[in-house]
Length: 129
View (cartoon, rainbow, N blue to C red):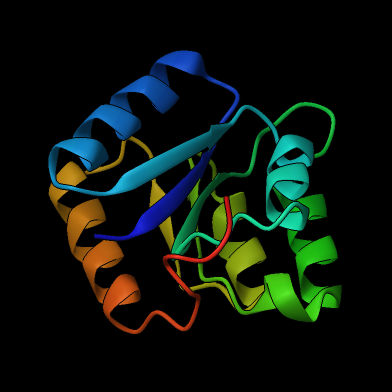
């Protein structure tokens, strides 16, 4: 299956998403903020998709997306934004995002979205740490 990077400050959310995604065969890496996600990505980790919470400490989702847009390597990785606020629609319009998911996240919808994104994956699933 696909590699997925979950970026969320909430430990419980990361654990829950990781557990669900691993049960269906995905390999999951976790970052508790967008800064840590950038470190993983710049060190060569290439997920098929990034699940990004907009509300994060230090470097938030909006800032992460701005940095991503300027980096040709990162720009090619699909991003699914998760957020409980209406702000996700503004962010979706500003950046080329795969989709935005409202919280609480419907796990079946999430699985379908990841499957669709991964089937169109242009990131190498087996390259990198």
